[in-house]
Length: 99
Image (cartoon, rainbow, N blue to C red; front, side, top):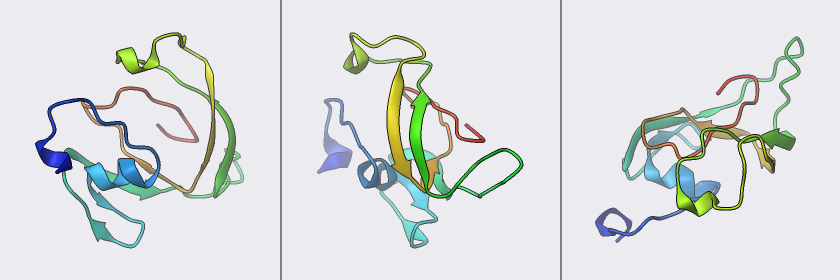
């Protein structure tokens, strides 16, 4: 059903992973709506990256009316260990050691 929709769909957490090509979480093949992979964060004491990532991060490159009322650099709270690689369809980005 999701692949056939013509209206925007917002995937949060596992919903976003589901729309990617594949995910390292469970080594799962997904729907492939977005030609990108979901990768696990790698902890790195030097850069301060912790897994899971829990905290506030700025969002940038807002590309949809879905974010009406938000500004570049506004903060979102994240709790996650996996994130998709940035692809052409990304509607916003945040950084946690890598984008």
